[in-house]
Image 1 (cartoon, rainbow, N blue to C red):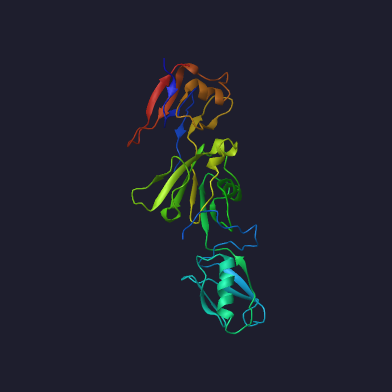
Image 2 (cartoon, rainbow, N blue to C red):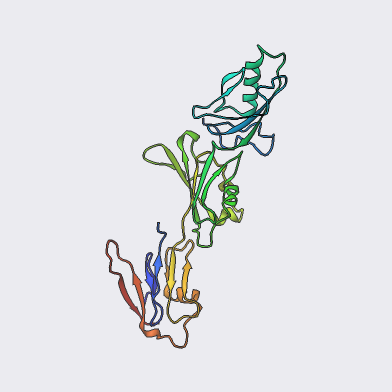
Amino acid sequence: MNRASGLGAVVLLMLPAVVGWAETPNGPGACGSTDAAGNGHSTYVLGPNDRITVQALHAPDISAQPYRVDSTGYVTLPLAERVKAAGLTVEQFEEEVATRLKPYILEPQVSVSVTEFKSQPVSVVGSVKNPGVYQLEGSKTLLEMLSLSGGVAPEASDTLTVTRQAIWGRIPLTNARQDPSGDVTVGTVSLRTLMDAKNPTGNIAICPNDVITVPRARLVYVIGEVHKPGGFVLRDQETTSVLQALSMAEGLMRTAAPTAARILRPQPNQARRLEILVNL
């Protein structure tokens, strides 16, 4: 007798017991070109809503004031007036401001610091401990973004997906594909090999507006007269046998009725589940 429970099944391994299976409910340039941690933010690429301070020697009207890059990508400064900031590195912006000040100041020296990073959000969603939107604040790898979100949750699947706006180019993964709209590319990464450092190429640089999705793993539920009832993660398995599921639940109790175990399996587009009797 074939006792393998199929994908999407609910399995009962003992009486009165039911085992259930459930799925998850439900300017681009080279990424990593910024380096906030290393070079004092000098290579960070500015964008709308970033907040900065400017120090300009012999220009007290400009110095030590907070400024925000507006929604059009400009910063308005005394003397220098409206200066394009979005798309420039901090170092390039310093040079541009200095150029604007030359008619007023001899050999102007300008220093810019980023006080709030607001233009390079990355969404980390799904089965992580702290899902949410995080700012890149410089170059970050996939592992670093997962770490910022608190790491993956115990029920996480073995595979995650990265969705990237097409303006940043193709995701450097062999399985990356472009969606039909052409607006984004999507790639998948094995969490197991990523965490075990078995495939360094999977630890890709993350781009602004990337979406990292960690789906919930498929579960099989074993309930009733077993030693450890509950839901068990199947990880990269598509199916499991009844005996394997029973083993995960640490076996039957003495009070179980092994000849009357049942599998309850959802049926597509039907509210009623298929019930299969199993003699253990």
